[in-house]
Length: 437
Image 1 (cartoon, rainbow, N blue to C red):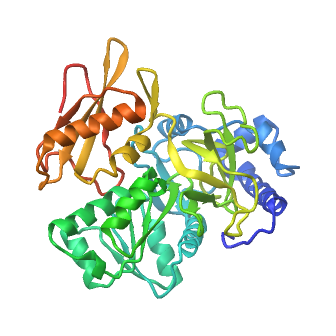
Image 2: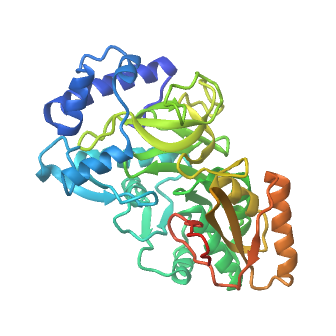
């Protein structure tokens, strides 16, 4: 299903509408959560058009799903089949609250694995590759799907779950790994570790680094930093969620563009504050709304993801695909934006600002409220061999002034004092007034 090659936008929408009708028929019969919502909205399996669906069906929110799981513990009522049909349990990474549990039937899981096969093939992975998954293999869905998709394709797949960073680096080199899957932060961490241990990564076989979990893979500065640490490798971005599975893959021809998996997902773009549809081809920052067309056992209908994106033109891409693109990848999350003295800031913008400064080993941003005003303090950990921390402090302060017109306190901390991350980096921390690192 995910391997379909569409000839134009009309073909995509015709296919999506047919998939939606089948999904709605199943949910009306067996899903308590969505069956009631569909009936209340006056929607049945005779959906005449995508517009009919999107103008009639209300949004689904994460808060609503959390309340349903609390009321119908432990798994909620968004289940289309008897519990015995479900074979997988994963949960969200809980970066914005209590984790959501997510169950999948074997069929729904296979549907998501197929989506990841599309991601891997778009990024040039073949059965000859050896793929290393550098994540913890816990209940967070992480690269579970990517691992199984690579196995389905015939790749040699190597789990790095129980290894520390030194052991992972050794395994990548000794097993002649060609594809590395991890977060952008962790790709940088492994590259820095190799440099510290005087390991020449230009001798590694890694040619493809597939990143996700954070916006960095579509940011030019972060891509450049990763590729400088891993000579001969190319960074490919993608994104997805526990709630929907894989959602995008990088354009094969243009870095910084993410193609939506529209064979699997019905996608909408709305105003982040009003919820109103954004004008077609407006090019404005929008919130991504997703309907999962094939995850029948635990679906989502018009789910407000909270992901902020900039939709590209509704035309055929240079790579030949008709699936819509997101320019610049995932810009940020609606609940991550902060307002500092008249300036809107996203973590991804600060990431892109600081990543080119090679003297920074790690950083942390503390957010506090002072007399009802939001303030930032940025902690910088220099590289161990950096000779002049004071000059680095002034350089970072100047970058903030020039880029955001903000005077931000910069504090230098000792090497090794800031945390390191394997999954999603948590560099932005809210603190109580008067407390600090």
